[in-house]
Length: 219
Ligand SMILES: [Zn+2]
Image 1 (cartoon, rainbow, N blue to C red):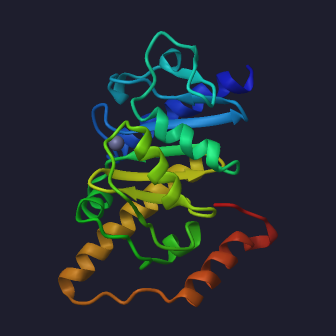
Image 2: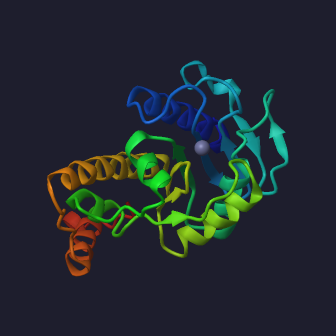
């Protein structure tokens, strides 16, 4: 099995996980993986995630030309491609409308770090990209600006969450952690004023996580 075929399997498996974990429902959300520089495997448009099969995956190049598919690519293809073109270190993207992250996106508030695990896997807050219509090339440009050079998760204003990584497992983990951090932060605000982790604490947690057990990690 070549790397593109293997990537199709990984994208399908990740799509099943985001449904099972209630990070997404129906057809909302999309996933892509770039196994080689100029090939992207992305979920198709309009097919419920629960029904997705390996053969439904769409393969495109970085300009969005469809190479192999019976379906149209996700309508958020321009967003995924814009991020891949801007960041060579990013090879996987998971986009969901999960409830708690979306609440912050709709309030257009960044998500600060309150949990150890968010400091570890992201190393900083999740910023909000300026609003643009879903599916538009403007949305892609604004997402790229929000990711910057080093970011791995952003909110799309009035829309949802985008997390990225070198592998799909990393991008998915970041979605889970941001969603959990957002949920706990909201509850903490009901109790009073949450205490955010300080920059130096976040940096220490991130560094320890990356270098844990002598293994270099990017997550
Ligand atoms: Zn969306």
